[in-house]
Length: 245
Picture 1 (tube, one colour):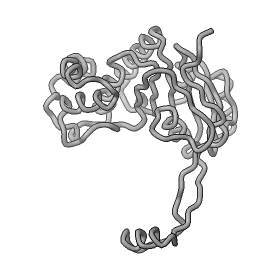
Picture 2 (cartoon, helix red, strand yellow; picture 1 turned 180 degrees about the vertical axis):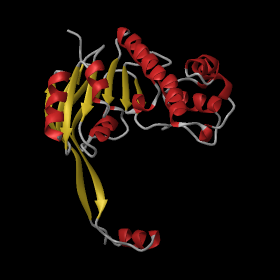
Picture 3 (spheres, helix red, strand yellow; picture 1 turned 180 degrees about the horizontal axis):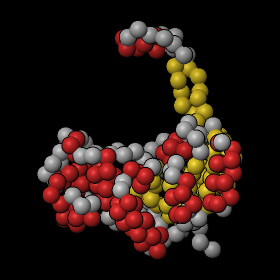
Picture 4 (cartoon, helix red, strand yellow; picture 1 turned 45 degrees about the vertical axis):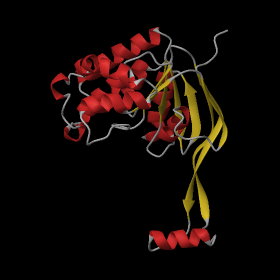
């Protein structure tokens, strides 16, 4: 029996927020040393469980503040869960925030090498891959341009091209596909299909419900960090739309 690529088991995630008001960083530091700072927990995710199998697209939907991005970060190994357990079998290519991993002062060429290295690839390999990555992203003419001058669509193309340049076991995508033009979205879907044929699992967050219905095999609806419904995309999306009207 093939094991799931992703297992999320009764996961909850809380952020620690300070209750103390301080007029300066110095005052806050003094209070912290004197143990005069109190904290409260803000629960972003509560008791979520699901599995994603090889070659499957699993989507997360819900309103802003539902905990979708926080949950994605636990799967991408950016944040550890407060309680529960996350198992990810294999390599992860995360696209959680547009431009995350890029240095805006560096050129596209330099950022390809940097981002690829952050994803665990060797710098010399990334330098060899630069021309093909730029070509896929339609940015061949912009290789020596600092990415601070890039539009959101250009950043999306560059980030996606780097993250998917090799076959990952898990591809984590948070809203990135919704910022590109139709050509980028079409080519991204084709590349995701190719990765899935190679056994990759995709965890997708999007407010574009039409895209979710088109791409996803299963959908989890979250609200205030808690699971509301999971299952067939058409049924879950329809229930969510009725609830949100």
